[in-house]
Length: 579
Image 1 (cartoon, rainbow, N blue to C red):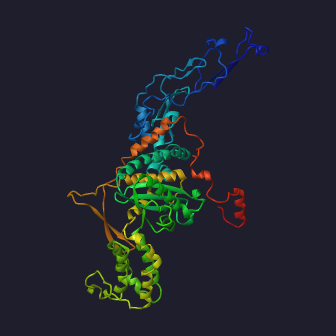
Image 2 (cartoon, rainbow, N blue to C red):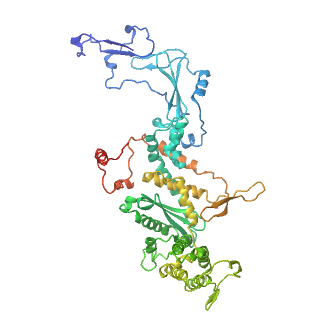
Image 3 (cartoon, rainbow, N blue to C red):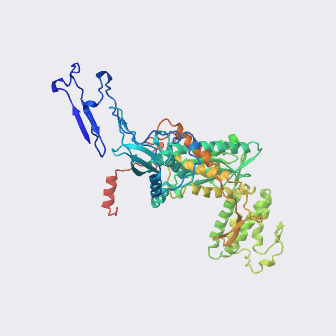
């Protein structure tokens, strides 16, 4: 570096009125070689041309973006094919290409000096996020030209970084795992803070808005129905009282479309996870009763929800909405009670009959049209197990019992038979039996609840907006692929796959469906890209919290955390190993 300074007389340095006054001049030149120059040949700048309080001209890292490099709309980025390129192969290509410039174009506008260094230029390859940047420098160190492997948004964000951050969320993936994958591949990856900033600033709102549009289409399809039956169930993000989120999902019974999704944070219920499902149910019914002709709601046996749906004093007693209970949960609870009774000494024979009794419960609920008919069918099991198939007020519905000649029959009045009678005729259990007679099941909704795990695994924690967005992505995925046709082979026959159930120790089959196409994803990607294009500023260093964010209600723990140093000392005092 060469620095020259030239000043006038020391006594006149502040006297600008002196015609002999020469303003200070500072010239800095960088590069591997110096340029012979004569300072007297430099053009003279008069005082009337002097500009004060302006930032010195600095060399730009990148050349101005051309129209081809800028992302001006979603189609400039969404759907564009990308590849993995190794640096060595890229260098080979760059070294054999004809460079588009014959001389260095750098110009210092402060002194109107232009560098005219000629090739060869030195090439430098660097990684920037997920992109590769090639830079060419002249012999004097000036950046002659820069090429980036990715298009850019305004304010300089790279398109590949943005799409990777967005699609980690849209695909239900986790940043830590993707980063580890890229690390094993020795590839650059979007920074962690950048990922979370993109996710919060552009993705979560776009997903919610997209779900609102798609949900409106689903609601519109069912508004013409005179009676709408929905299946409803809640899912906690973790078991027990440590749950932070409750996702309450509602499915239309005929089409199996998801019509409503509500996510409740524990902080919205005064940190009481027990009532999260109740709050979510209230929001669900209040919303759907305004949009659809809601006739029936099917849930599992939840006491708080049963109280809300009580036809005499419940919250929705005037809505005319029927409350039904899930058959599968009802049969499961019955099996638990029978199994517990069969484990008691002298009652083991109940275990032999357990499966048949549960199957008889299914049959009675399906065949009965009203409570009296159900009781006639259901109580018949007490006669059947003692080998009595005809009694004063009825008879069994089966044919010959010769196939059961090896089965042990219960003895009338035995301990086992009395225990079974208490379960079959339990007044508290029979009080809700009318809710099973419409023979509804939420099995399809249970399938969707498991599908949520693809997007919101219970092994990872998420902020409230991100968790909600992930559950909505699961609903979008489910609704879009809900009515896929069954896969057929070359002969046109439907294809099935065998599945072994370890618990029941039985084989079953299920139909294979065509592969998911995710055709809605490009539209969602465009809406996310549009939010970035329309933004007035770049990414903020601080991620602002929205007004409806549950985190504004405080931390999850009831008590504030003590200082870290205090915790360290306390644990060391107890002899804990903090290594």
